[in-house]
Image (cartoon, rainbow, N blue to C red; front, top):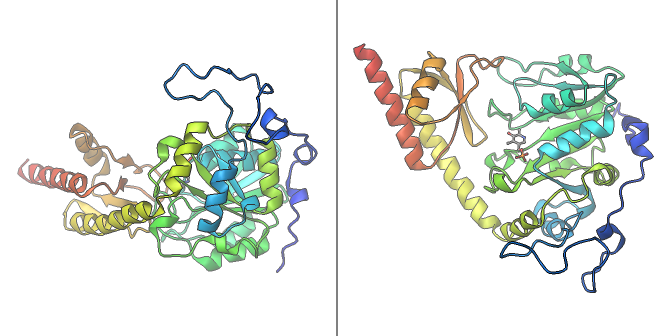
Length: 357
Ligand SMILES: *Cc1c(COP(=O)(O)O)cnc(C)c1O
C-alpha cells in the first residue's frame, strides 16, 4: 500500500490540541443521586412527558445496541444529528478555511459541497463517467497536498448506482486523506457495506443514516463509522448534546425492530421493480436508470413539463434535469404501491392528453 496515512497530519493542528467542553454529564456519569450539577429544572417539564434532564452526550445505550448489529466496536461509532452532522464535522476537523480542499464526484449528494462552502473550503469536482462510475485516474490527479477529504456516495444519490469496489480501493490506497463513503442507501442494495473494511483502511470513514431504510428521517440521527482516534476527535468537536433525549429514546426502541426495517426494505425493493417496469412502458420515459437505492432516476423527453404537470396533480418528485449528467431526469422516490400506481396513472393521462393536443 502506497499509503502513509497519519490522522495527526490530516487534522487541523488546533483541533488536535483542543480541550473539549466538559459537560456536567461528562464529569459525573452515574444514574442515581440528587442531580444539582447541570442547572436543570428539578420539578419536571411543562409537557406531559418529562424532558428536564440533559441526554447522554455519547448515546452509550444506542451504541451498545448498534455495535453487534453493525459488527463495529462502540468506540468506532459516532452518532450525529443526521449524517449531515458528521459530514460537517469532518470538514471542520480537517480543513483550514481558504486553504484546504475536498474532492467531490458529481452528480452526487449536495451536502458535501454545502458543508465545504460554509467553511470556505475549496471544492474540486471530478465528474463521474457517463455510466456514473468513478474516474479513478482523474480523481488521483485532482489530489493536491491540501486535499483532506474525498467524498464518495454509494449507492449514489441521485444516480442510484453502486460505485465499483476496485475504484474505491484504489483511492483508499493512494490518498493520504480521509475517504468518506456515504452509504445512506446501503440497506437497499445486496452489496456489502464498506464497514467491513474499516480495520483494513485507517483513512476510511463510512456514513449511514436512520433517515431512509429505518424510516426515522424526522428524528435526525445518522451514523459515522471510523477509526477510534477519529471518532474521539468528532466527539470532541460536536455540540455536547447533539442528539435529543426523545430522539435517543425513539432510536433505542427502533433498534429493537430491525426486522420491521427489513420488512419495509423488502417491500420497497419489490415496489422499486414494479415501478421501474411500469415507467419503462411509458412512451414519454426515455430511460429508467438501474437503482440500488429507494429511488429511480428517470429520463423524460420533456422533464420540465412532466415535473410541472405532476406538481399540478400534487405529486412531488425531485427535478434533477439541470444537474450535470442528469439532464432531462427526475428523481422519483419509490412510494407505496398505491402512490406508485397513482403516479403512473397520472403519467399515462399526461401522455394521452399530449397525443390528443
Ligand atoms: C438522505 C441522505 C443522507 C441522509 O442525511 P441525514 O442527515 O442522515 O438525514 C446522507 N447522504 C445521502 C447521500 C443522502 O441521500
